[in-house]
View 1 (cartoon, rainbow, N blue to C red):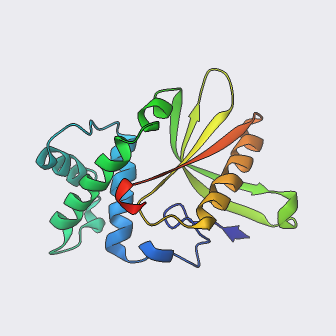
View 2 (view 1 turned 60 degrees about the vertical axis):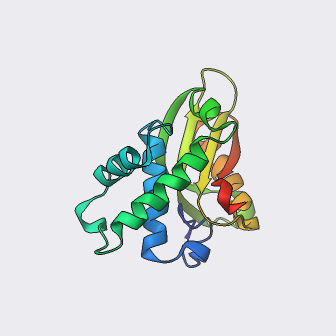
Length: 171
């Protein structure tokens, strides 16, 4: 079995440039704010309050949570306000954190497992497999997204295409 990480964009054994707990929490909060269709036009304090409500009790990092919430707000706003993000999220039913298991021929019969950030199911046309990244762009991110699109397309029985979105400050 080979697992792909939903947060790191690489195999689970290589968490990459977002490896520490605080960075992972920021990425998780950005995903949750997107999932909850939060208005990026809200003031920072309101967005931080909403992000804080999305934290589970075990996710609070003593002495760092407030700074991490503000960092998540900044990255969320940069992600949500990019051209194309609102358009694709509004183009169909959005399914978030979609787990999959797939056997793809070019992986030698290995079972691949992962969690897709978002699958947009439009009324017509291909599925959109979206990956949201808060870290620096890395070549393996596109490989991950393409594998996810193939696996999701096979599971849904219809064509799927992948799209990567990075927080602007990461580009």
